[in-house]
Every structure is written in C-alpha cells, then in structure tokens.
Image 1 (cartoon, rainbow, N blue to C red):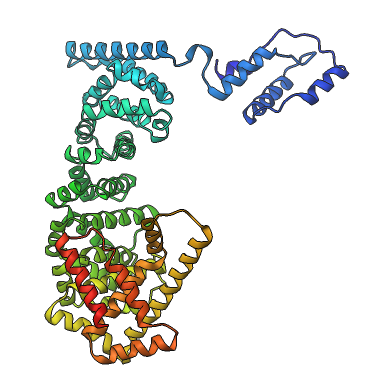
Image 2: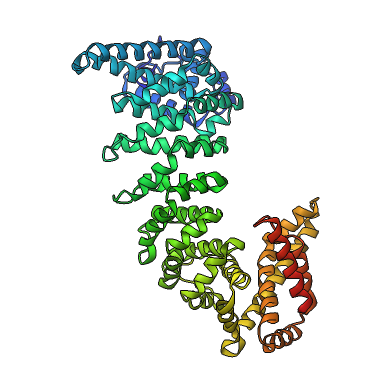
Length: 554
C-alpha cells in the first residue's frame, strides 16, 4: 500500500451518531505520533474536498494498519524473516546467473543482455532491505551471498559495480553493525576473508570521478573502509597491505579542484596511520613523506578556501605527525627538506603554522630527533620559534593557548636535549638576550602551569574519584603537569649550562613570587621516575640519569 492508495481509501459510509459518549471517548483518546497526526490532517483535507453526506470512519484494525505502515513503511507481507531473506538472495542469485549467461552468449549485443542487467540492478536494490536487519547478516554469509555480491565489483558495467559499493556501504554502516554484534562479526569476517579491500581497490581503478555516480562510488568505497576499520581496528594493516595507502597517495597527487573525495582520502589516511606502526613504515617506503610535504607546501602561502579544505589540511598534518613516530621517517623528513618547509610556514603566519608547529614537535622529539634538532638550528629556526615562545599569536590560531605553549616549549626542550657543540651554544645564548627576557617568560609560564596543576589536584580531591596511582598521574599530566615538566626541564638545562646570571635571575624571581627551587626539583624528580616508552631502554636510563644530575647541580 502506498500513500496514494492510503489517501484514496473509501470505507463503506455509515451514519455517524454524535452523542455525549462519543464526545467523552474523544477526550480520552491517547495522543498519536506526529506522523499519524499529519496523515489524519491530509485525510481530512481530502475528505473536505469531496461532497459526502457524512464523514467516513475506519475501524480500529484499519487504523492500526495505517499507523504501522507510516511508522515502518513495511507491510505485513514484507517482514524480513529468514524465509524472506532467502527469497531475496535466491532472486539475486538467479538474476546474477542469468545476466552472466546472457553476457557470455551475446557479448557484442548489449540489447540482448540489457534487460537481465536491469533485473540484476533491481535485485541488488531489493537486497538493501537486509541492511536494516543486521540479525540476518549470518544468513547472508551462510548462503554465500556476500561472495556473490563481491564478485560483481568486477562486473563490466560500472553501474552494477557502483550499486554493489552502495549496498556494501549500507551493510557496513557502523550504527547498523552495533545493533547486532553477532551479525556484524559474521559480515566483517566474510569481507576480510574475501579480501574485500583489494576488490574495492580494483574497482576504484576504473572509476571516473568526472561522472557523478562514479564519484559517489569512490566516496562510498572510502566509507566502507572507514566502517570496517572503525568496527575492527586491526584490519587497518590488511587494508594498507592490499594497496589503499598507495591509492590514497596517488589520489592526493591528482591535479583537480579540491572536492569531498580528497577530504575523505586524507581522513582515511590519518585513520590508517594513527595506531599502526606497520602502516607508518609502509608510508615511508612508498615515498609518502614526500607526497604529504608536496601537498602541504601549497598552504605555505595560501589559506584553505573553506572548512572542508582546512580539515583536509589538518588531516595531512596529523598523518605526517603519525608517520614521524617511525624513526626511519625522521630521516626521510630531513632529506625531503621538511624542516625548511615547516620553518617557512611558521614565518608566513598562515593557518598552516598551527599544523607545522605540531609536526616540528614530533620531528625533534626523543633520541631520533637529534639530526633534525641540529639542522633546525642551522636553518635559523631559533629566529622563528623564540618569538612564538615569547608571545602566543592571536590571529589564525587554531590551537588553544595551552596547546600552542605546550608545542613550543616541547620543541625548545627537545633542542636543549639533542643539540650539540655550536648549535647548543647558540641555543643557550638566546636566553641571555635582551636582559634575560626569555628567562622571565620561562618563569611566567612556570607559575601559570603550577597554578593549573594545583587546581587539578584540588578538583581531584573534591571529586574523590577512586583512581589508582597511574590514573591520577595521567589526569595531572593532562591538567598541566606535562607542560610544567617541560618548562622546568628547560629551566634546569639553562641554569646548569648557561652563565651564572641566568640562575641568579631565576632565584630572584622565584623568591619575589613565593616560589622555590625545591618545587622545581620535586617536579623533575617525579618526571625522571615516570619517563615514557619513547626510545630504547638504554636511552631511558641515560635520560633518567641526566635529569637527576641536573637536579643535583641545580
């Protein structure tokens, strides 16, 4: 029954006898849904245009049927039970087989097999109904329907393959998958065993994004990858192995106007790199560092044209940050002149300087950042970073003030740890310039983040949460302790390695503002006792010993 039939429904007219009981009944009638009220109003308007002696009535059963139709849009004969699903699958298999036979029999006569192709397309459309009932997914897998659907990705007619992509996107919708864990597991297992990403990739290679339907199919393909990796993150490795990172890098290099598919490609790349070390190595092997740097170079002197392009730019910066967690990629970044590009972005004062600051932080951090730290000083990076240290910019700043300050002090702390010889001396000399103004700024930040940590600790006491020691420490780190540790690390480094005037200024400012050297020592001892997993065990021991030596000298 469709809406037209519903509105033209003409029950047998019966005389209406209004009385007090009817009026009372109408008062007690329960409220109906908004859809039912709109339906009744439409029916009333229709009835008003007809010349009838009395208003027609419908029975309670008919009213329930109408309500069920409006709310579910499924009539009684279309309930998707096992039998109905089997019928849909059988119909689909028959149509697919018929189309295959007709194409083999009449390969050069499209008019002969076109009707079977239309039937196949409609059968795929009918299968979309199963996407609303994930409990039936195990039956689809059992009947080998998923394999038959995937085979059609290589169909000669791209209209059919794009319809298959659309169907798969509906079946793997994350919200639907979470409605039935068992059904979702069965479906994802079947797709993984059939190497679905490789089949999707083969289909992508022949799609023309100038054609609207095929452009949508590219978008839906990326949607399938997002869905399956979100539901089962460990599939990120398989997706990359089967060629998706290579396709994304190729897609990013295509010189066409920015569109939604490029945005989605950068998003999928970021997802594949986020928590998967194997994919970071693979990106480096595919020259992905150079590709990302080339794509980001455009934003050195140009801001993104809109919110979507800005999001794509941020995704590429995030992907680069993830990639730099792999030691070999640090060297590729250095050889690809990534430092020079990030330095220029910071000087140009465009939106890209937010991302470039994060990338620099990742490139210089830890023991693998030594070569990058020394090179950054050589390319006059100190002239760029210290103005940002002295004053957080307000224009075109996407990061919060705290995030900006965290990245800047992290960069300086990394350089103090990794720079050697002349580069280290140039860095220390910066803190003696202009009557020790950078030392004053350091102490200003020290007191700011001490206050933040104190507030965090008081909030933890008030909340009285039952947290173990590690959880409490993590909460304090996110509440300002991490940045405080970096600031105090810089204070220790410049006081012990710099001229005596620096330490004298530190002591004087601390005494004036009620601080003490003891607090800084306590912060750094706690820091030394909780070093993260970056670097080897040998490096961690050296780092811990170095920090404790600085504390003793301070």
